Amino acid sequence: MSRPAVDAGNIVGNVYDKYGTRNPIARALMRGFTGAVTDLYLRTGARTVLEVGCGEGRLAHHLIRAARPERFEACDVELRPAPDLDPQIALREASIYALPHATASFDLVICCEVLEHLADPAAGLAELARVSSRHVLLSTPWEPVWRALNLARGHYVRALGNTPGHVQHFSRRAIRELAARHLQVLELRRPLPWTVILGAVRR
Image (cartoon, rainbow, N blue to C red; front, side, top):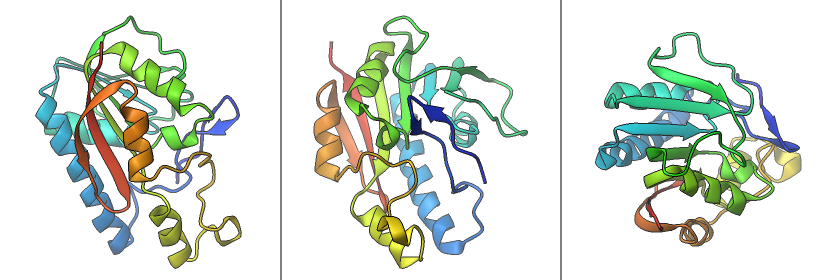
């Protein structure tokens, strides 16, 4: 199980190792999630990639094995990389609110399972769009289905199914509307229980 990192008082890391779970149902759900993210990643044909909020780097590791760009960077507010992480992934500590990159530095910026942890997701999204020259790939839990599934498996009952650290709760309409502030939404995928969006940056 990975430990959460903290950014401006918010938990922004996994408290449950969904990538390493042995639960067969959770593994099936994760295949749907990683499949949707990978398809959209490949669709961009990006040569330079930044993942923001990378956690242990499990998603970055999976994506770089699917297609190896010229440059793949990943960041989080506190890094605890998995020991078998692909060595081509360049890691650094950084906050989503102040990314240490020039405007339009990357073809693709990826930010999965982060916005729901932020006090100001609109500011985070604006920074993602700033450092991307072409595309942003986002995902968030699909609410209220996410919480309903937590309750169904007996987790976080006292919090009515809310995962620790989730301070935003996005329906599919809500995350699409947030994304549209800075992106032209090109595609929305619905792997249960997530929403995955690929958008083109508005300039």
